[in-house]
Length: 148
Image (cartoon, rainbow, N blue to C red; front, top):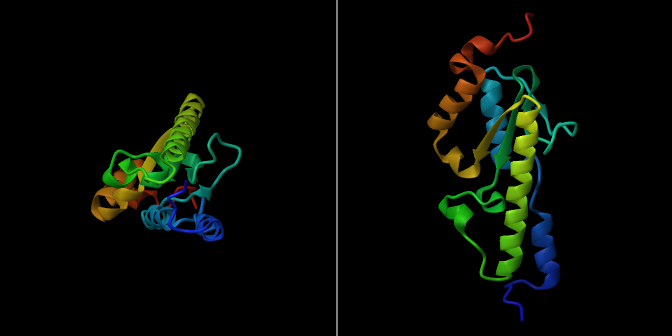
């Protein structure tokens, strides 16, 4: 017995709309990094976990995670759908395990790893301060990182 409010075709269409990259939260973090003078590459497949944003010169890998999909401990992340509960608990647990493995592999290779949670985007000032710390001195002195 399924308790889904949508039929199989509609549910499939809804799930197809869930993006894995270039999400709104990811674009917001990228814009913030760029405005603070950081330059980056996207989704480097040669790195464990294919980080969303990579600042290679700083050896910094940034993951931008949706709270629900990656099991954050905020209200949205702690929510578990009533329909197909076991499936969702297993899926989020797999995502968390994969995230931890990618983080460990990156750190073992000498990379700094930062995770930005979707809920953190609500406090733009705090996030800007955090990104500024990644870039060093608020990012203002990092505009010319290649000596040009």
